[in-house]
Amino acid sequence: MNVDKILAISGKPGLFELKLQTRTGFVAESLLDGKKVTVGLRSNVSLLSEISMYTESGEKPLVEVLRAIAVKENEGAAPSAKEDNATLLSYFGQVVPDFDKDRVYVSDIKKVFNWYNILQAKGLVSKDEPKAEAEKQDADQAEKAAKPAKPKKSEATPTADETANEEKPKAAKKPKAKKNEE
Image 1 (cartoon, one colour):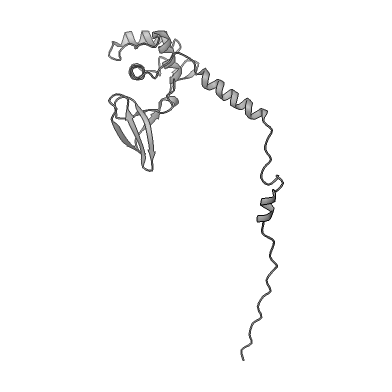
Image 2 (cartoon, rainbow, N blue to C red):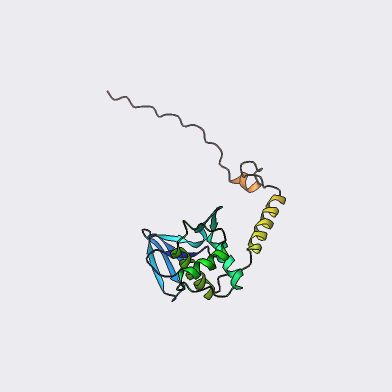
């Protein structure tokens, strides 16, 4: 599940995908209707990858909560955010058993289910761990560690072309004599 470019914009319903960054803000495309909107720098915008839910043991990233819903629903749709509060609280308690009941409100849970259903409709949810990305990063790091370090340019011996292009130091100029005007 890759939600690195998925945004929640305060005051606008649904989720948006970041398309283009400009000097004065950015352009985002709605995941609901596909319309593009421009968003200024003063708007309150949150990346889904940086949102967390409160639990008794700390904070749990929203991506993990969405993945837990995907596992429970076998990547199918979650309950509608319009269900009654008791049903939503019970279901969310099954998905995230240790969520902090004092700091996670029903409105937050409704928003999570709404976001999950939007992402699921677009095929952006997955119950799989991001193993491929982690394995690729590990392989890249191992490859970098196995290669001998290239010498820095200042430490490298100059090539014949570089020595031919080097300028020879110029002799210091003598100061001009001043003319005596009498």
